[in-house]
Amino acid sequence: GAVVSQHPSWVICKSGTSVKIECRSLDFQATTMFWYRQFPKQSLMLMATSNEGSKATYEQGVEKDKFLINHASLTLSTLTVTSAHPEDSSFYICSAREANFHEQYFGPGTRLTVT
Amino acid sequence: GENVEQHPSTLSVQEGDSAVIKCTYSDSASNYFPWYKQELGKGPQLIIDIRSNVGEKKDQRIAVTLNKTAKHFSLHITETQPEDSAVYFCAAPGDNYGQNFVFGPGTRLSVLP
Image (cartoon, rainbow over all chains, first blue to last red; front, side, top):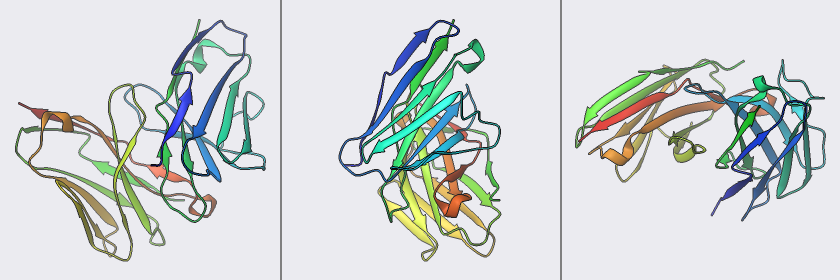
């Protein structure tokens, strides 16, 4: 149980284009989902927290107009990187949490490369 | 806000030996402490967690101990195997009513055959 999937697992896009990453909880209802960014050999950096049906809460320094997050259902959240630039290249990971439970379960991550 | 420190940053052990990774946290109200294992190119995997109402939890070769007074918790891996080689992250509840986690900087464990 507690499986989270992400799609795509890797994506290459050109500078100036947008890319969407999907995060799905496969066997539980994710009332809260989180989006992280991870640079090589570094820890996970929380970008935003989203509760189903509500607007996402962004961490300080994260541009909400650049990183659009939608959590329209209890099993799906999406992260759209708009007008991507090479500095947005990173490993993006989502996690999901069920109401009244502490545990967070992570997806396998999406490697984004902007050329 | 919560601050989590983790030591050591790298750890090499011989196969069959034990490995211990320690984390400290700053918020005495924190009540849940997970440990994650991350293999190269993959997402973190929850391997064990502990709540503040217990001092120790064990799952086969993995155990976690918690000292609330000193505000530290440790991951213990016994009889290490090469497949235990990975980066391990500890975490503690952050702001936002504890919904999110604050992660430690990670420990790169290498188990040498």
